[in-house]
Amino acid sequence: MTVFSNQSTNAAKLLAILFFAFVVVSLGVRYFVGDLAKVQEAISAKESRAALRGVSDPEQLDQVLKQYPKNEILRMVLLANRDAIEIDTATRRIINEVEPRDFSTPIDFRTANRSDLDALRRDLKTAEINVAALRPRYIALIKAQRDKLENDARSLKAGNATFAKFMAMVDEQHKEIMTLTSKMLAARAEYYGAYERCAAILIREFGIYKVTNGQFIFPFPSTANSYNGASAALAAAAKRIAELEHERASLRQSQFYKWKDFADTKV
Image 1 (cartoon, rainbow, N blue to C red):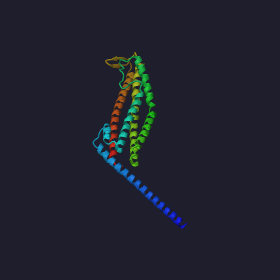
Image 2: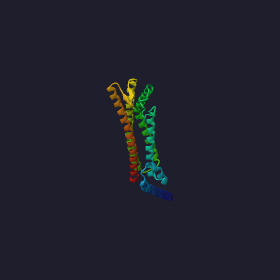
Image 3: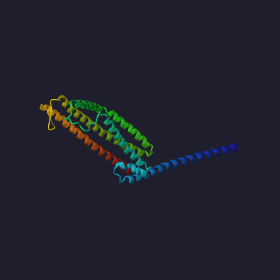
Image 4: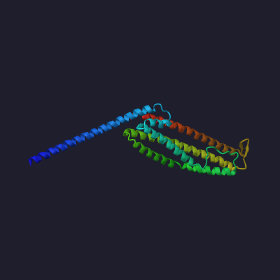
């Protein structure tokens, strides 16, 4: 019985030693893996800084990634860039969908007949109503895009701090895009409204006004003032839309430089 007791004690000690060794090795492996991940992330950051140093056009990102296909930082920057492109494409599509016809170039009112003016006014009213109801659809688009981007970014398995910073910058990018899009929708609404007022005046005065040397001649100054005011508002809205298109291009470039800074900053 004594021998059995000693054997049991020795076995227990051996198990304790093996368990302790397992814990030590496990902790060591975890430390090594965590440390290795930090080293790999540091290498990735250094490589991405070098790769993007001379890049000034977001269109070049695909070519850069081909040189460093496994660089997680570059892949995240490319994800953010594609996110902006996809949102812009989808936004343009849904905005254009509100228009029953192309309103980018106003029709020549001087040669339009009554039927042309009636049809134009109906289409403009439809577009004005549609663009006013577009915001919920646009917000849903942004949310769906963010969810997709978050899943794609998680799959890259970057460090927690890097991922958190990435998503914070994505949210800021989406906020800037939404602000600009809200301005574009408002400008479109103003454009449709002014365009419709011009058509409404001409419909009301059809057969009464004359066109002389390319100019509308109304019998009453008040009518002329109303038409001139609507025409000026139409021109101002068209100019505002063009300015916002330029602002969109500037924002695109500004966001690209922010992502270059992201790649250039060690988290």
